[in-house]
Every structure is written in structure tokens, then in C-alpha cells.
Length: 157
Image (cartoon, rainbow, N blue to C red; front, side, top):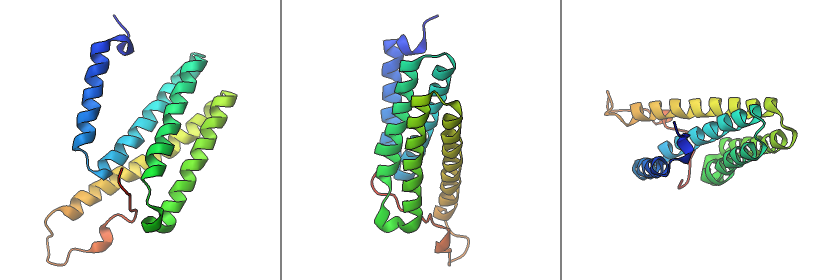
């Protein structure tokens, strides 16, 4: 009937839903939300690219880049996270460059490359969350191994 994005009530509902979700999320969940948001923006960009909607494609790619820069990169604590955090930072910079290239050259392969990287990282982040839940559960023995905790330290997200 009406496109979902043109209904003001639906927009307001989604905004409240996002605000509620983020208010209740811990830092790990917030990073997962960032991954999901970036993946959704790239999926939208691919659709816009296929339909030759240049302006909308550019906006969707810009949204993904904003999430990479202002969300994922900004949430890394390079002092505490060490080499792993630095490598993630560099990977996010690389993804931003690939997105700029994809937008400038209308390159689907570059979008697919970044989408695959985000899928892999997001999947790993989900797995860390599952292990984190297991680690935070009451230990089966008195000596719960500390090595199971996440190696990446994220600052305030």
C-alpha cells in the first residue's frame, strides 16, 4: 500500500524501538547493533545500485561509513586492545576506502567485499557474545578460566 519509509507513524515507532534497544544494551550488544546497522545500510546500497538510484545509494553508503567511523572505529580502545584493536581499526579504515571506491565507481564487487567482511566480523562478535554469556554464567567449578574472556577491550560505545 504505502512504502514503509513514507509513513511518519512507522518512522516514529522505529525510532522509539531503536532508542529502547540501545538504552537497554550493554557495550557488547551496542557493537553488535552497529555491525547490524552497517550490514543493513550496505544491503540497501546494493538495492539502490541495482535500481540505479545514485543519490539513495550514496546516502546508504554514507550511512555505512558513518557507522564504521563514528561507531565501530570510535568504540575501539587502542591502548587496552593492543594489536588486535589496531588491526580492527585498520580494517575499518580499509572498508571505508572500499566503500568510497564502490560509490565513486558504482562497483558492486567492492560493496560485496565490505559486506562479507562485516558479516564475518559480526558473526565473530556474536560468537564472542555467546562465549561471554557462558563465562558470566555461574562457574561449574571454583576455578573459572579467565582466558575465555574477550581479548578486545571496547571503550564506551
